[in-house]
Image (cartoon, rainbow, N blue to C red):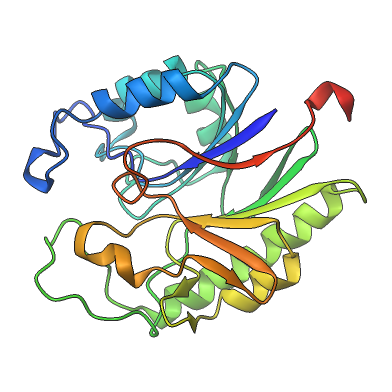
Length: 251
């Protein structure tokens, strides 16, 4: 069993919003080809937000179907552009029920276990430590820092980690995820960094950064945690293999 991660699919939704102006020519066809070639039916794919340009649930249905049709089992995390994402866990479960390959999600401080893996994560927000990047496209730039949202989602990450610890056993493999970066290049730590460190995951994956913003993300190891940026263009439109472990049946 392998775990892959990819973020920022920015699927077109019923609004037919393409990504050509960002240089993502033909998207999402190249991503689909790479995904279908790389991922097996028993693999797990962690999707770290900005899945669809939909603003309403009905607009996201074709994109959820596209995700469901790709190989592997999927775990979803909300991004800042996922306006279609329901506000309650119950409504989210109902929306995702027709798509059987979507086996779980992280929502407002929840955690998820699949086989030997335990996932903790939260959307996050642009922290005050984030560098400014003038000239970015307004739709794809880093959001302005919001200390209130940073603090709110830090609390949600704390709860997610606590729930993940309750789900874990001594053999569990911990993976952390966020949509926004928990660490910036430098490295510059944020309010989220020590929470991730206390969880002690084998890797922490995140997305959100594109184009000129990609170098602003920290990639590498910091205080025992390995960080990896997996937004679509940073990952060359290919799911990123982040861990390979035993099958769920063996645990």
